Picture 1 (cartoon, rainbow, N blue to C red):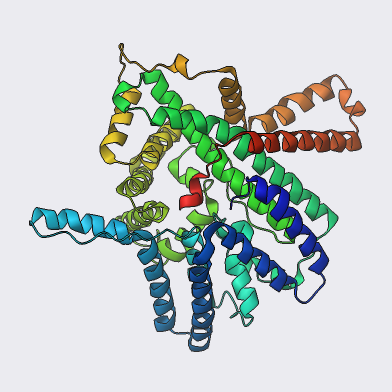
Picture 2: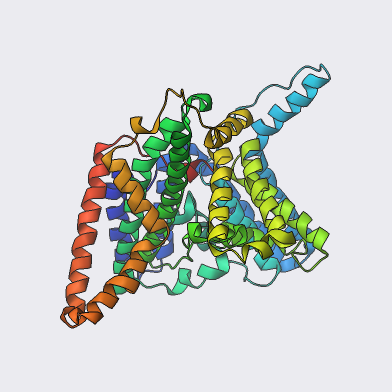
Length: 477
């Protein structure tokens, strides 16, 4: 189940909010929310909920063992078990496929293919479990004695399918002391509506065109159309995933929880390093704290630091999916991070505009590998981005329309925080200059904002009802 479905919006969510509000002062409030979270997962994944609860139970007892023994052996065993579970369910087919390619070289009979359904959210709840065990070992967390609270941490439905990746220490106290008040609930509703609009109004509109373009053979795409495709996909991916994160954060607030931010206008970044401090923040922080720093981070020799970065971004790519294309995507980011440390960073500091262009170009070219299955097809698409074809049968005018142009314009402004800049730097200054700011009443502003959010929500819901195109890109990771 996804948050942008009519079933969730008009059936599951209202019932959840009523039950949560009724039980908020009860000692069973966590149990109620756990049952709701289980049902959320069952509606989407069915019997695979057994795997999730197997993981929860396993890590509940592993956590006790790690807490009691405080040994590296205990935490190492716990991490290895979790990684093995993730490998089995996510990477078995990929491993067999690559082994068969090796066996083919030696004319050995291939291994039989094994089809294992990928459980939604397994990458996220596995990382939650690993961080819990490591933090218990580091004494950053106390061992969770309540099975219900441990299960709720892993299965809490706003973050279950696609994050953000939540550290147990960041919300441990909220299991006990959380309160749902009017201001937090209102903020949660506003954040959810913004996320829903980003997903169904912007991402879906742009994504439909992006899919049409990427379905064309790259050799038949004109240069302008190729750029329209990758720009559309880059914006779709950002608004799709950040919109889902906004909805998750908004839902959490409505339930009494505070999640950390997961995006901070990543396309404003002026380097790949800055990009990763703004994009999927919870994932980049996870890899930093649980892999990069333990490997030595940048406290070791430069060569070792570059190796650490290479390992981290190889695994970052692999985490996103069982495909060499994802690995290549991760390696590209790792490569440019290393280049920025070696010499590129010092050059870019002298060219303010160029560093933004460079960052966007690297990010968008890397997205090609993220989007397209198959290395050769991805390389051919990149070729189409730089090779002019005078006789192409697919041109940009076949796909441009008023709705797409308007949505792209709004998306670009929003992705660079343009509207906020316009409001603070231009509009308010004009109001002050002509003394119109004295006419602006705070309550009037709140009323206008509330009406705007209602209109946006209604329009977003109409989009949900009227369109069968409602993918969620990160759902498969």
